[in-house]
Image (cartoon, rainbow, N blue to C red):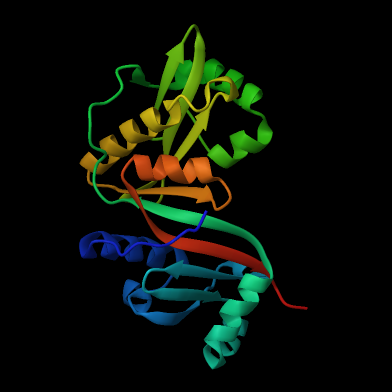
Length: 232
């Protein structure tokens, strides 16, 4: 799949930049530029890797303080090095508008009483899918579809600061391709967007089904995050 970042509506873009400014510990205005933008990344993990975020406006180069001079001196080479040594790539989506259409009547709010149902779903889905999903019935909000005593799909919101949330989703392997994932994600994204929060959805670049789900629920692709090992 060719991942092409989209130009966001200006108000939404400002909110996304504010979120990432908080994540990276910089003023949002530092990120609000076109072309190559070098961002000094003070997080501990930055010392162990290089990273870029490709957007419709350009490329953010996330550089540890010791590597900032390298990135500033030749940003194109820094970005090319990340691409050549890439170990992983993820897509960063944000709700451009609350999902349209009627909610699926099978979707209900989940809570602590549904812990056993989630445990069973995670066993059936396997540790890799469960870890990537990052869902929990005790997150700030969780919704799901329960049929025949089984939790078939769940989406939950993980808080990202005061006014932003990240959507996680997990679907039972036996019922994939039945749009249950879209049902729970659209429902929870609409609830979060109506409450005024910025709604983020992340997926691995190779997971085309996850990217299609995001787009079906009104998310726009803002950035492609690429992480690479440090050069030898």
